[in-house]
Every structure is written in C-alpha cells, then in structure tokens.
Length: 451
Ligand code: BGC
Image 1 (cartoon, protein in one colour):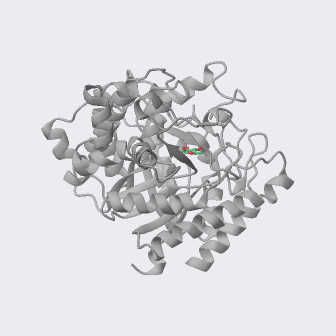
Image 2 (cartoon, protein in one colour; image 1 turned 90 degrees about the vertical axis):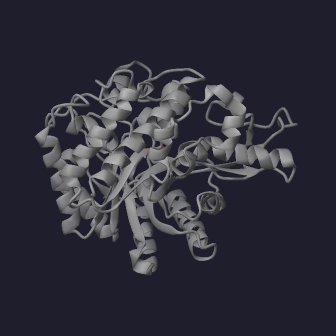
Image 3 (cartoon, rainbow, N blue to C red; image 1 turned 135 degrees about the horizontal axis):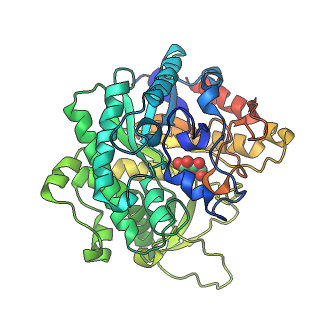
C-alpha cells in the first residue's frame, strides 16, 4: 500500500453535532428522551442544537478539507432516516446526507459512514434487548446502502457496542439507563446479530466497497510477569475487544468469556454463526487510555483501583493506574505506548486484518478561548499517540490503514454535556463560531509530514 493511501481523518457522530432534532422530519431517539431525565446530563443539556452541523455542514467540511484530511468518519442518524425506526423513509433525512456526502466528495474527502452511533429510534421497543431491533437494523442498513452506496464505499455498522451494552444496559450510565449484571450480554448478542444482518444485506446487494465495525478497547498491561497477572490482562482484553470481535471471526465468544460465564452467555445458532464468520472486512479501533491489570487485589489498601467498566465480578480483574501518567479532563490516563501494544494484540489475534483507528483523542480543560487555542495537552497527546501508531504500522507491520482523530469540534459529550472538550476546533453552544485550536494546526502538520 502506498503511503498516500493512508487515511487521515476526523470523526464525529450525528447526535453529538447535528442538532435540528425536531427539524427535517427527524423522529425521536433514545438520547432525546434520556437527556430529559433529571440528573442524567452533567450540565442538564441535550443535543437539540449541539454544533448546529445540520445547517453548517458546509463550513465544517471546509474545516476538514483545510486540515488536509482525505477521510471523514461520521454517523447517520437512524431516526432522521426512519423516524419510527422502521417503515416510512424520511426523504428530507436522505437529502441531508446526500448533500453532506456530495460536499465531502467535492472536497476530495472519502466518507467513512457509521450506521449507528447510539441514537436508537425511540420506537424500537425494548431496544437492544429485543432481537427485532437487530432485524430492523438490517432493514435500515439496506435503505442506507441503496441511498448512498453509489458514493459511500467505506461502511461501519456499529460504534462501540461495548458502551451500548455495558453503559446502557448494565451500569445505568447511558441511554436507555438500565442497571443489571446480565442484560449487557443479551444486548451485546443482539448488537452482534444486527451487525451480521447488515453485512448480509451489504454482501447480497453487491454494493461496492468494504464494511467493518468500530469497537472500543483500552490496553491492559500485565502488572507483573506473574502468570495470574498475564492471564488477567488477557482476560480483560477478551472481555473488552474480544467480546465484540471474536464472533466475527469464529462465530463464538472468546474462550475466556465462555469458560467463566457458561450458560449466562447466549449462543449463536448454526445459521447465525455462518452469518457472522467473516463478516468484517476491516476492524475499527476506538482507543483512548490504558491501565495495569492484575489477578490479585492490590496489596496496598490505599492504592487507587480504577474500575474495569463493570461486569467486574465476571472478569475478576483488578485494574491499577499507571504511575505518573498524566490524565485528560475525562480522568483518562495518557499512555501512548498502550496504543502500539493494543494494535499488536489485535493484529495477532485477528490474523493481521486491516485496522483503522476510528477514534483517538483527548479532552482538555478549556474554560475560555485562550486556553483552547493553547491546548498543549491535546497537541502532545496527538503527537505521541500517532507516533506509537506509526511504529506499529512501520516497525511491527500491523496493517494499519488509517487514523481518525476524535473529534473535529467540541460537541455534546454524552453525559458530560458541553463540559468536556475533545475538539480540534472550539465550538460552544452559546456561540456556535468555529475557532481552530492549536491542535488543529498540530494535526494539520502531522498529516502534511506523513501524507
Ligand atoms: C465515543 C464518542 C465519545 C468519545 C469520548 C467514544 O466513546 O464513540 O462518541 O464522544 O468516546 O468520550
């Protein structure tokens, strides 16, 4: 692959940037509803205006083009295309994405389209606990392939299903806000089937291009060489990335999950296995942070044990912060070398399947314009993480095809509302002006020097 084919992009998602939730015939999503529940969102806000991208997308595409990006990852809002989740198509929704896609292509930017980034139509009864939602997703996917498949050749089915399942149906943190220790396994199962149904439609329809999935994972470094720590690290990775990726290769959940969970883990039927095996052309990786993993409880009772994102009793892994690592405004440790190790782990486990880093970025405290323009922490984060990604690609020969920085502009950061800033460009809900930050120029230089 020649150097120039590497994709340099930024990533966004529909609910986080579009706004215009009651415009253009859009239906209601579970996030519209969730944001209305008191206490759910840190600043009591929602995505109803967000970055007003629905009206300002041309300006945003220009910002992406000026960065020198040759790719842009964005998501389609399912309720903007199918307001009720199934049934009647909303022509205004299709028209909006047609305008966006055409504008990107006019600027020489390849669209990488995610079909689902958490804004499930409210009408999909019982959400991901219901197999019907997976079926409905397959139908919705086909509508998108038919409408945009002549120009979009790079598709991702689902964004971070781990978050949908664990945060949405396990920890009561994300929409739809359910707390349970078993339901995440059911939700995850239906999400994987949804991926399978969509890919089945894609392949049967003979649409040009490739289809994959964007799964998230932190790196878990074994605390010591003790076999218990080595296995704890492996177990944590299988419970994280493997949970949503192994089935696409083997039709089965990872062995360490199966042996621990037994009958609590749903099984795929023979037909479903057939549908899932080989159902991804590439792997997306959303990655932000790392920690140590140990099989033993920390000896020093005073040492801070970071949670492992739930389902901890099942995993039985102790996560320990990496000493001295600086933390982002999300309180996530900055550990660039974790990315290189994780890319190698993925490449090895999945036989060097092509990988895109579909998200990576840094939240920095930015109370005002001045601090945003001098976002030193983010500049360093990007330089260091990208350097490690390049080592994985060039020295370790991981088949890395692209890098998408999260995110183009400050946006609705889910339960943090507008209180956390990830953007290369400043954008506040009060003043929707787009103001490039220091990191915008840093990233522009990185692209220029590597392009
Ligand atoms: C999600 C994004 C989110 C980002 C930062 C990822 O989990 O895909 O939507 O904004 O991380 O929290």
